[in-house]
Every structure is written in C-alpha cells, then in structure tokens.
Image (cartoon, rainbow, N blue to C red; front, side):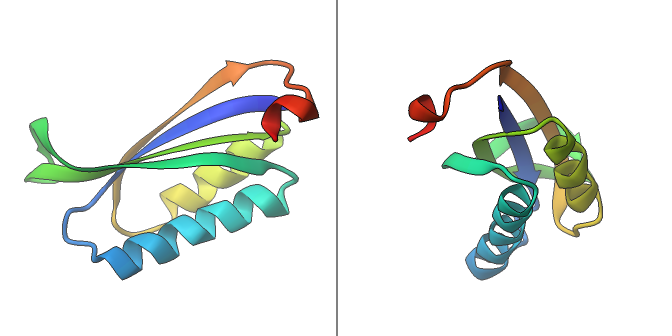
Length: 103
C-alpha cells in the first residue's frame, strides 16, 4: 500500500454541514477502493495569495490516507465532479507502508 496526501481548497460559501457531507463522500470513496483514512486536518478559512473563481478566501482540508494506486484516480474523479471545490493537489508520501504503521 502507498501513502498519499490530498489538499483540498473548498469554497468559503459552503456551510459546515455541506463541507462535512462532501468530506464523508471522499472518505467513503477511499474506503470503497480499499484504502484507509489516517487523518483529516481542517486548516480552516485562509486568505488566498490570488483570486480563485473571483474569491480571495478559501477553506483548506488535508486528507492523509493509504491505499492502492488506482484509488487516487477514483478519488480525483469524484473531486472533479463535486461542486464547491476550487482546487486540489494529491502527493504520494511513501511507496510501501506496512499495515502496522497505519494503525
């Protein structure tokens, strides 16, 4: 299994309920594809360096998870199809992660 990190920039107009439902959808995709969520860090509302979709603020969330490589393609497909997400970035943190390290 590989370890990945996905950083999401969400619209500031999303309420906390819609943010949580969006994130629970992504966690369900991770688990359905054979992965496991390690952490979900809510960085909160931040000012942006430049306007994105004519908005100068955004809500950041970092997801750290392990899983097989095809999981990333399915997760990013779901992210692209979701409303309220301005930008996202996925990075591979480690190639081989033992199951003992994940717990």
